[in-house]
Image 1 (spheres, each protein chain N blue to C red):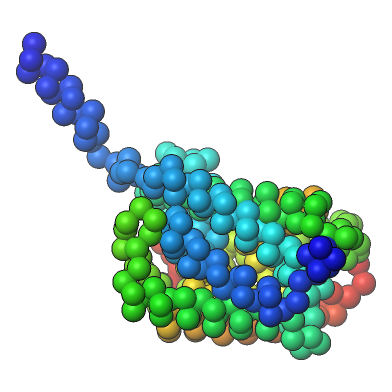
Image 2 (tube, rainbow over the protein chains, first blue to last red):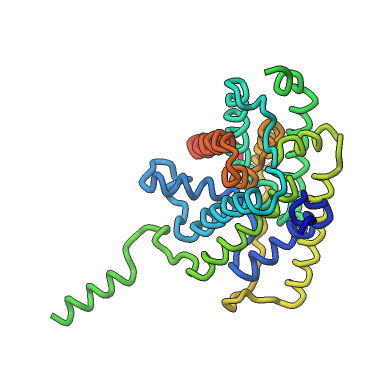
Length: 163
Length: 163
């Protein structure tokens, strides 16, 4: 029980993350990916949108992505409240400030825009795509790191410096 | 009379027009999506992939934790897919398991870089955003709000962007 209550080591975490792919295929018949849930929510909120990206999205076929996301919310709740000796520190306290909220909002916009433009995120491209030897997914993953490393090393003091 | 009711049945069976009126996924698949989502939410939280500091330390090359998890995850997923393909495995509902490749276009590079930048700033890709919210980290809502705005921006600009 002690083992469960502590943060899990990388090898166990990696195995369990990887197993999500076959589990989702076997049990739900779906390819593992999360960022489509954003499009699903957008399409459900504006079914008669003038934007084809939202209007023409198959909301019934995409519903599982929203249900999957709700599952992740439940999983986060269970893990933090019942499976952790100490609550996880998600973001440094400095983010609970005007500067922090602005950074998270702008960063979030990049996450939403970027994943939809790239056609997937870490789950759909980096895990599922590479595992299926899909070369565009390898390219996407390389550029995820180009962007992340560029911001961290190039604009580091601007973004991560004093708030 | 008979003709009228026949017509009515016919029109109910195939409603005119819209593609998003097509059949969705089954209730079983939705239930299983919720279950696997919960599993994944627990794994994301217990592995600490949801921590901003872990993501930041990954981009700073300060610790290998995230690289190891993603690496092991890809290998486990890859082995799973090799077994699924060689065994021609089916889902629990008897459907064939097929990976739909994600195509290459300019967005894979540009969008990929933008997402990577957002990932570095917020410390969250789409999965961890939901886990943070479930675990009670209110700042996760800010990141989600940003991601929804980003998704809408993409929906608005899609026709003007290079693909």
